[in-house]
Length: 180
Image (cartoon, rainbow, N blue to C red):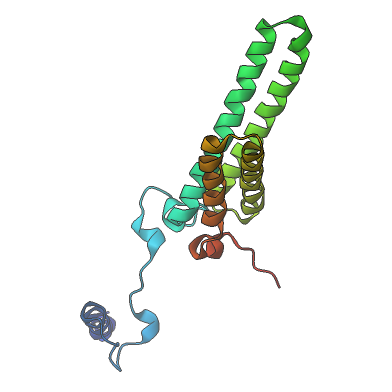
């Protein structure tokens, strides 16, 4: 046993010296044993190998998740508001408000599911997230047509920011499917 530990000690020492000096490994140290930066091993909050661990998710995907999640929360809250307003409102408008509220709440839950997919860095979630932000841009267009320029500018920037964050190279690398 002492012979094997004596043989491996110089290799580990050479690899450690090469890594600390930022030089190429010596001839005796194999390159495949050189230390590499393991991002997943540095984060102790998530189990290793779990998809969507916070260490494996770029900041751009996290930001896109936050933008998409906010849209989901707003749609769901507006749906609940319409349902409550329909129950306490006029009988003629009650059915329309409840149906509209149920649809808004359902869309909010669906977009929330998409935000959860982005949070877990699942490739399928990018397409519905892009469509969600395109619908925000469409709402911006109708705001401009209605003369609501003050509301249209931040809405358009919000939708555009979501799309850009989903296609930044760091996000694209993590959220792309490999096609053969």
